[in-house]
Length: 391
Image (cartoon, rainbow, N blue to C red; front, side):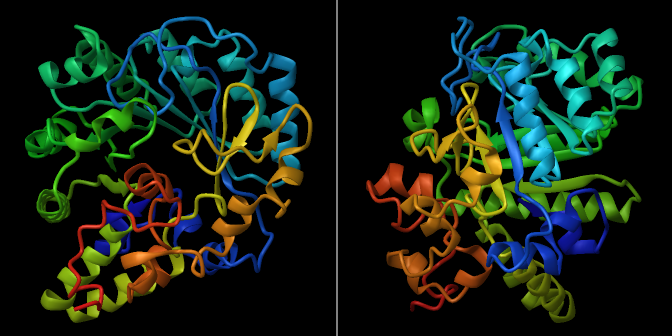
């Protein structure tokens, strides 16, 4: 995750201390045990929508064998013992779980910050107030364009209007809320409209996700943006973030799942503001790039532990059988051990890149989907050979 706002203006939001500190760099190299990883828990696979790019391949059916309430509480106890700082409830649609509020409140009482990733369609005024009351730190609502584009991706007419109501209900009760937008060929031209939208709706935050080829998203590989379009998308993000700041609008703007974004920001600043460029380089060096399997983990609805939510085919253990901390610190699995020290394993452009220390090889699942090799180059890197020192 790249905080464009932090890199451009040195502003401070929750999460920046996890991303840009000496401790975060230490966690990357295994030299500190101050805390466990940020954990995404896909608490259910069931969903009331059927999104075209869903990495969980979720739908409206009931899936048997998901963690029970008591099993989930034991899992949360283990996370607290391992000093996990954040638990992100995701899905499917996490609000479909009848025990969501009980488990979210239990998590907060254990000293873990609770965040929620949702499609927003189930957030009535009453639900928004309950989310606020139990202390959820942040609600991320997925939109992939405005009305027609979003509904096509979400597989349901009316999904945009329902999500809009959910956003407005969060804003009304003072619940911190933001958008999650996955960039692809079909919504690329909507990005300026999304910036207009979050200003009009008084939304605090937007995360622009790069497409990862996983689950149903695997079928969208040929619908990803081109390298040139990725650069254009970043130019839009930078331009609009600068505009917000100049007009005194405090919005947190982030990009997710492509760490060459940080390098691109650095290279642009190098030509325009060398002093700022050096500060950007220092921050992204502290961040250390992709941290799947290092400072980021995912647990699926059935208790299986994965390096991130897009790597469901790689399992390190199950929290029903072993504590999460024991699974996460067991280096006997070659992928988990490899992710913690991946540089000797990387191939192609990633292995030879001058910014490897900053990017850490980017996203392995995307590389595997495109090349059939977990350690191959990430095809979504849009930096030129000249920029990364190969030409």
